[in-house]
Amino acid sequence: MTYSQPPGSAPGRRTVLRGSLAASAALSLGAAPAPAPAAPAQSRSGRPNAGWGVQAGDVTSSSGLVWVRSDRPARMVVETSATESFRRVHRWHGPLLGPDTDFTGSTALRGLPAGEQIHYRVTLTDPDDPRRSGEPVYGTFRTAPARRRDGVRFLWSGDIAGQGWGINPDIGGFRAYEEMRRLDPDFFLCSGDTVYADGPLQPRVTLPDGRVWRNVTTEEKSKVAETLGEYRGNFRYNLLDHNVRAFNAQVPSVVQWDDHEVRNNWYPGQILDDPRYTEKDVDVLAARALRAFGEYFPVSTLAEGGGGRMHRVVRYGPLLDVFVLDMRTHRNANSPGRQADDRDGILGAGQLAWLRRELARSRAVWKVLAADMPLGLVVPDGATDFEAVAQGDPGVPLGRELQIAELLRFVKHRRITGTLWLTADVHHTSAQHYAPERAAFKDFAPFWEFVSGPLAAGGFPASALDATFGPERVFVRAPERANVSPMESPQYFGEVDIDGGSGELTVRLRAEGGTVLFSKVLRPGLVGQ
View 1: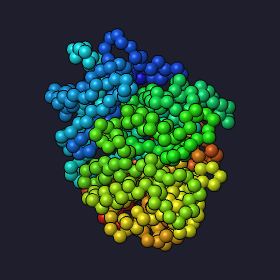
View 2: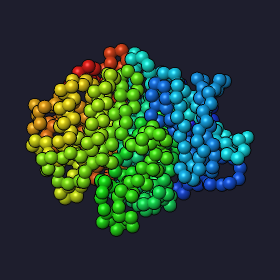
View 3: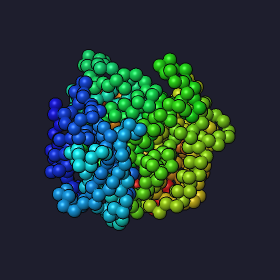
View 4: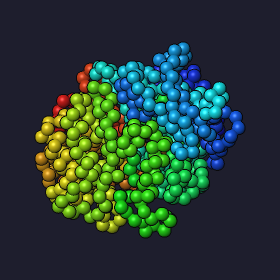
């Protein structure tokens, strides 16, 4: 099964990718993965090769990051242009790629024009002989608009290669990525569980109806990840899929993490009793996973000089600020969640103070809180503990709910307009409206939370609701049994479309196959709705 640039991309504000980008994809990406794909070799002969494709991330109105991986030591050079012909270019000299970063690297592009299509190509050169260079690899992205009237449209989802369902060449790999690419969004918000480092893959899985699911397998995906090399291999795995590489070359991403980048339901200070792990200290595993995450995704705050943290604000023009939360690194231990005082909560005191400050500073019409876990959906961890915010007690806020209550009260009293919550994690798609008249805690303004996913993983039944903040499930689509494979149930992603004229924001919950399951229009300038 050879790679070809899929025909018929939907036209939009972004230039339809043909010509140089398609040629580069066919040349550098080569064959689509087979059951035992041959990854680019770390050969010392020939010229550097960028067979893992390119990515762009954390794009704003004037900046962005471009990522690449080499097959050997190489110098990264990025050229940008306003046209696909690259008649006039601006050259950016990137880092030296070597074994310290698993031959990956990102180059920061600054001073870009707002609201413009940026075409880029990455060339890898021999560090000892710059005249020896590999074939360039092409990508594109659109910078955020400087004018409100231009509008913004993006997609979100999460949960990739989980529950034993990896890249299946029989169904075309991670097909939802190609469907998202055709929608031609301005960017993709990846809401966590970007890999399943704790989820080994088997070559074959027999489904309940007798069909056989076949996985592409690699050495690093044959066991739970513990070493830095094994974590790196988990992040490389998704890039074996031709749909992912084509998507990355066209759509920039804003990426966050959750638990499965490290280990299921982890929290700082945890000591494992899982016999699969020889390294029992989760803090050691998390440090290795975070390093690999920063090597394989272009994240501004994880790049050199970025502060080494996951939470950040990505400002996407006058219409939108995306507040990327980290509900994993600073949380307290999972517990029954009934304590009446909880300073750390799920965000940590420092991140909560940062979030309050940045929300108050924001002048964007819409403020998306990109959460890697839901607020009012109950996510258990074993028989007595809980993973997310809610803990099943419908009464006044307790445990981690106290921190969320403080944040919601702050939004109301500071009259911060245009907030909404987007998340994934629970492997179904739903829309929840939160209102004080239904809640035990009443000092907040109404708001919406939208859930989407999985993007390439097992589907699960709908989670129970916790009434503390008064959620009403307005829509849900979920399987009736646990861990339904992508061959049995569609994958899910969401779309957010902000109209540049009216400022109205439309959320669409989508199912793989082109179906819009649910849509909701929100009006700008309101504290709650």
